[in-house]
Image (tube, rainbow, N blue to C red; front, side):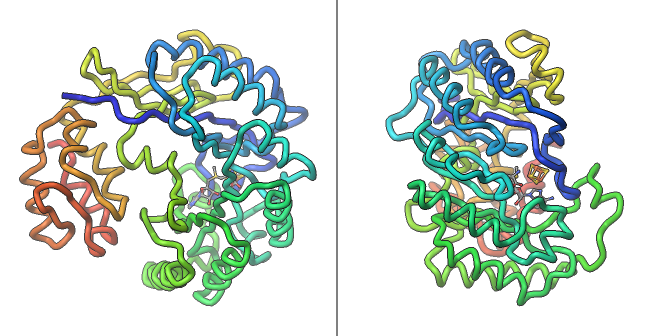
Length: 384
Ligand SMILES: C[S@@+](CC[C@H](N)C(=O)[O-])C[C@H]1O[C@@H](n2cnc3c(N)ncnc32)[C@H](O)[C@@H]1O
Ligand code: SF4
């Protein structure tokens, strides 16, 4: 029996000052003045259109992702949040995160985001080495990253994440360690530490930059940085996520626990459990901002709809749950997939034999080996 899990709201804001050469997110270089007001109107129309899918449910987290949400004036974010909270039940004290590019931090804006209800920021810092930042095509240097964080702290933000990437072109182990040291000095509550990947259809994939660290070097960086973070009190709870106690990202945790999310905005993806139909719906929106702006609120803005088949659900579940150090409970698997635990018993036994996870009959927890070879473990659950 499928039981609707906690519900999150994801809001995609698709513009950036400049497209980074490694990035495959749905982000578009904004040319000329951006249509913030029209986009907020479109988001509200999009939300109205999808409301029947989430009738009566409580939203546990909101996440403004991008693109570069910090390009949006606080007034636009405020107008959207007011409209959303008038239409949906917001859990008391819910986490509301806004992604921020340090190159867009303007004085005075952070306190307005805070006043609008945003209570968590996520800064795309990537590195504190100006050479690395240049090679990544970033619009900011390390001094601006420090400054943006300081502005946010002065404005009253006490809960923020810093995104770092490692295995960067021409980066050494010492440089990766330096990035973590500088990040720690800013005392964030959360650090995301991503290995740079060459995503298809990016400039980096077409023309890979020189000096990308080899697999073993990247692994050393990961291990060393993980140890530094642990020593400083940031526990790893997901492959790339580290947090102070009680400061995990509730929004991302809901994804990884196979929770539900309504996705609104250009190219946004959603996953919703429809209790009455005993189905799981995936829905995504028109990707290009111009098309989205023109069609939001109508069926034309739906890029696609798909019901996740029973055969596919174990893989989709594992794609998320096996990223978490805590693993998952078999009862949780049954509730969020609507399948009996027997559906994955053989695959779990194979994975346990290979030392990839433990299973005490209640909880399944990936081992260190299982986390290192997460993709191989997940593949076991692919439908035939
Ligand atoms: C949507 S972006 C965050 C906000 C903002 N757009 C920025 O870049 O400052 C999410 C994060 O994903 C990470 N990321 C993006 N592309 C990546 C790639 N190819 N490999 C690894 N991490 C990547 C970066 O750390 C980035 O900050
Ligand atoms: S600023 Fe962020 S979303 Fe925009 S292109 Fe760069 S990495 Fe992608």
